[in-house]
Structures are given as C-alpha cells and as structure tokens.
Length: 606
Image 1 (cartoon, helix red, strand yellow):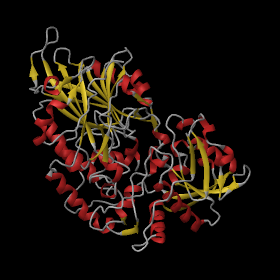
Image 2 (cartoon, helix red, strand yellow; image 1 turned 30 degrees about the horizontal axis):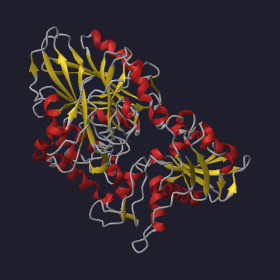
Image 3 (tube, rainbow, N blue to C red; image 1 turned 45 degrees about the vertical axis):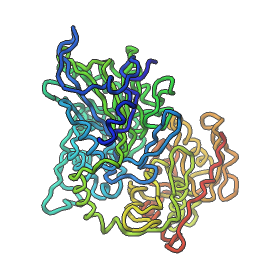
Image 4 (cartoon, helix red, strand yellow; image 1 turned 135 degrees about the vertical axis):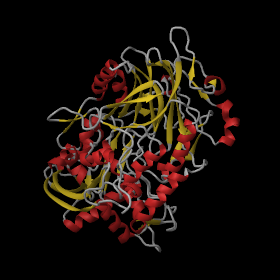
C-alpha cells in the first residue's frame, strides 16, 4: 500500500506558536513524498486556474468531529486526554476537549476558506454527561448549531431515547414528558440535517430521516451520505428501534452514490458510523501499511464502497486515524476518524474540479488536530454552558460518595477497577431485591468515564457528585435479575470472545466472588477456561441455577449476549445509577473514602 493520503497528523497550535512550528509539520498527498508544510500546504485562496484538461479548480475543506456524546465541558480523566507520539517514539498525554475550545479551533480552521463544510459521523448525542443528558441532549444540539455544524450522520446512540426522540432533535419542539426547560425558549431542533440512509421502516423501506444532502457552496456541490453500523440493533434497546431495519452500510452508500451521480453530483463523501482500530493509539501515529495500518469492520466496508465516493469519515470505535484503504478499483482512498468527545477534529483538504464536478482524488489530504485547552474559549459557547449549568446545578452538585484515588475504566484491558465497582454496586442492589442473587455482570460499553479524585467543580477533591456518577452511567438502565444454569453462565462468558464479539471482544466486568481465567493464547470461545470459573470460591456447576444481575440492556441480549435474553424468572430492580449511588453512600465517607478495587477477578493469560 502506498503512503496514506495526509497521514501526517498534527496539533493545531496557538497562533503565537504557529510560526515556530510551521517547519516541523508535514502533509502527504496520495503517492507523494513528504514535504515541509510550507511547501505542501501553501496559503489557500479558493478559486485558481486548473491544470490542462481539468478546467477551473477550487479548494474544498471538510472538518469532522467524532463521537461527541454530549461532552460540552472538558472531559476528565483518560477521557480528556490524547496521546501524542514524538519522532523518537516517546509519547506524551495532552489534555483536550471541551466544546468552548472545539468551537474556537473549528472557527480558526475555517478562516480564509471559501468552501468549508463541518460534519460528524454519528453519536453526537447519547451516552452524554449530565449537563446534556439531563435535558435530553438539547444543549448539545444547540451547541452544534452555534459552532457551525453542517451535516451529521446518524449513529447508534442517537437511538438511545428512541426514534421519536431522534426526530424531535431534528425538528424541534418541547419534550413530550418534561416539556420546555425555559418559559421564554422553545427548543428549535438541529439547524443541520441528520442523515440515516440505511435506517428504514420495515413496512415501507423508506428511510427514517433524509438519506443524503447536497452542500452547495459558490458553485461547488458535494453530496454527503450518512449511515450507521448495520449491527445497531445488537447494541441499542429494542423498543427504541421497533419497526426499523438497518441495512448494509456499503450497499446503501452505493445506492445513493448512484442516485447523486444521476443528479449531477459527482463529489461524494460518506459519513459512516462504523470504524476501525489503528496499530497505535497515538493520534499522530503513522497509519500506512508500514505503520500497521488499520483493522476492523471499516476495512471491508471501504473495499465494497463505490469508487465514486471520495472519502469516508468514520466513527464508532473512538479511535484516531487518517489512513488510506483501497476502493473497489484498487485505488487508495482516505478514511478518517478523530477519536471522541471533541478531543480532536479532522481537517480534510481537497481540490474540486468545476468542469468534472468532482473531487480530484489525488489531491485529498487529511490531518487530525488536537483541541487543546491552551487556546481561548468561544464566549458564546461559554454562555450556553453557563445557562444550562444553572438549570442543572440543584441536581448535578449533590454529593453521592467519596473516593481516595482515581477509579478508572480503561477499555484496552479486560478488567478495570471501575468495572468491578459497578458490578459490586449492582450485586448489592440486586440482593436487596432478591437475597439469593449470586453474581453481577456489567458491559464495558455502559461505562462512559472514569471516577476521578480531582474535583470537577467546587465540591472538593475526592467528592463524587451526582453529575460525575451520571457521566459514568448515563443510560438510565435498570438492574435486572435473571436465572441462568451454570452452562448458560459459561455460554455468556464465551459470548464475550466469540460470535458477534469475535473480532472485538467485550469482556464483562464481574462482581466480587466471581472469578475465571481468560487465556488469550487460545482462539474463539476456548479463550474462556471452562474449569476455572468459580462462584464464591466454588466451581461453576453446569446444572445448578444461578441468579445473575445485569442491566436492562444486557438482559435484552444487548452487545451480542443472546444467552442473557434467555434467562428465566426475571425481576426488575431499580435504576443502575441509583444502585451506584447507594453503594458509594454505604461504603465511603469523607473520613473513610473508597479505594479502587484491585481488578484481580479475571486472570489473564497472554
């Protein structure tokens, strides 16, 4: 594979440092050698004469934000940092994110650009911190309007509150239960289209929302098609998507690419809420074949997506990459992702040929920029946050516990201290409903942030507020209890690393007293060592019935755990966040804060 187009990724520096740094950056075009940025990225002036045979050419900029998830305030802990890789191979962590800084960075990036579009490939809302989630993500939609969002593709989390709520976020209007949050303000909805090309009504086949949009900028026409992952029904609550069908991503993009072509729109960019995994977690790591490239579902999607699509802006995996992957004709095509939570944004630059009405593929470059917190905050976004914080304060600032240290949830390792804490909290809550409950299992995707020791506001270090707990568990699931045989418990463990989770394992977090060995030297379901499973020190018995606590999402078979949906004698308990709050209040105080669990319940063999 040739060098990926634009794989040089950089931190957008404050203006006072830009001149010093200019000679250090590099931007690469397809098949071109690396050049200093002063040569490779000259000042852009919009229109200019094209080369012979190409007619008049203009510069086009696309800015992309990934998996924002309502993170209006700067995310904390590991969720608020990105990894920068230095030329000598060493790395550093940079604090990043916060919509006030993101707005400033995007506005700076657009300066001097006559043809610029800002996009997002899904999960702009959903699984949001309390400041947005408490108000059904209206604050985030208002923030996206303010920072100049133009097009959004739908993601799986846009369905967290169901399809009707998604349509309300698009069209506006007060919430059907909670109403309007201010007497003098009515929620007006998104100023930008939310695209859902592959989400169709099963009875009519018609898309739930617009499948594509055409952005027209001074004679430049670019089509954007938005799709979410076909597997969305496996990772969202069934009631929220009842009556909907999710179609193959590539086949859907191809269909609408042809439709756009018939309408004279040849420049097409796909917003795909499905992604990949780069070899390095650093946002600026080499992403061509020699650097390890990218793996995961997006590789197959890119290989099957019409060569007429000029770039794929992808998401879902929360990873940073700017890579090239071959299209069906064997030509390299840019595939990008800017991690999550507004910590990065991708800048794509390309030439648009007015004569062919298409993007010049060989001109496409891309760079991931850090949204650092050294730059000024956008005042209008600060005002927006302050207004919503005032409304949220009575709920958000209530203390619910005390911790002595950070309690983290790093998804790159099988078991985490925060995962164990949440499983313990759900087991404790379940036993108030059914004293015979044996164990609890928690899906890692339901844990959205760390619990940090440092104060997030004025509450003081070590104090856990309701807002911080909400940021960790924002889904308002219930704690459910089901009966499973020992064989079924083993089947659940095997589903972590096989079937729907074979390519990207989802290791459930486990409660105190439940242990087993995960042997990563084996393959498939055999990675779970069957005779190692213990419940309170006793071997798992195949024919015995166990009472198992899980959240309502898992109880419905979510995240590929079909066996959990076959549990019997169901009992529905209370809210999962309430369970965490009860546990923290019972097991911590200012004088005796809670330590992080040891995360030693799953023995990993590598």
